[in-house]
Every structure is written in C-alpha cells, then in structure tokens.
Length: 174
Image (cartoon, rainbow, N blue to C red; front, top):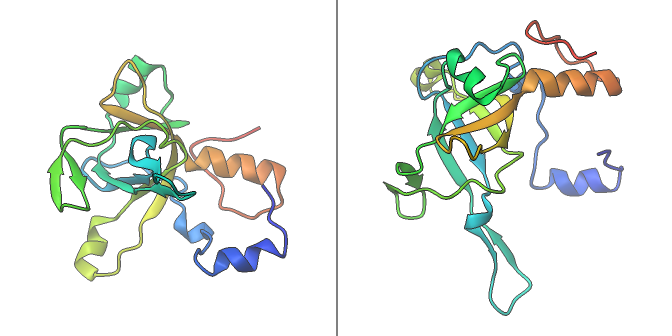
C-alpha cells in the first residue's frame, strides 16, 4: 500500500512509522519470555449497540519461542516462520489487572511479535524490536501462534521497492 502526501500528515498525528532500527533482522530467537504479541482478536471487538462505533480491545501477551524441533510437526521452516507459545488459560487482562482465560486469537493476523532485550530492563531504556508478523493460529495446535519472520517481509519489500534495509543472513528472497 502506498500512502499519498495528503494521507501521511494525518496518520503522523497519532502514529509513528517503524524505522529500520525497529526491526530485528537476523534475530536469533532466545529461550525465555522475551517476546510479546499485541493485536486485536475478533472476540474482543464489537460494534457498540445502537451506534456506528466499532470498539476493538487490545490483547497483549508475553510469550517465548518454540524449540526448533517443533517446527516440522506443523510443516514450518524456522528460516521463514516463527512459532511462539500461547497458553489461553494464563493470559493477562489489562482491564482487571489479573491473569485468566484469554481470547480466541481469530482476527489477530497481522499483529507483530516483538523482542525485548532483557538487558534493556536493567538500563531502563526499553526498545522492542519487531521479529515477525503473526499469521496463523493452527487448528491442530492451539497452544502456538505462527508468524512470518521480519527477514522474509523485508526481503519482499526490498525486492519490489527501492528501500535500503539491512540484508538478512537467514533467508534470501528471489
């Protein structure tokens, strides 16, 4: 999607675009809950009664990546895909500040999977990096969410647009 000159200033009033520095190109996934996904599942979205207002509630989830040997069970390639755990029975509810049953993840496709370096927590300068765009919540295994590595997405953008992003050493797009 290409935005015209009229549209961009309006978007910039409430949104800032990602920069190359925000992307985790060549990211080596680590063990531990250093990852979060943030999205808007359809089960947490609705049209308010007798209005034309569509309300979407954000869902934020801390997660960890799945071990490499698990990728073949869902016919995925770790150079292209990312698999992260989802425990629906232990999800954080930001409205009540409690943990409980989380939503079904239908409609969350397109949300980001972000990595936060644990050393940043000590320094107080937290700068999450986008590692993947989440695309699937497989019927065969509802305890994982699958995404496409940012390396693949950036490779496609580089192929079709003249944008100077860093090269991936993990995957090449031809």
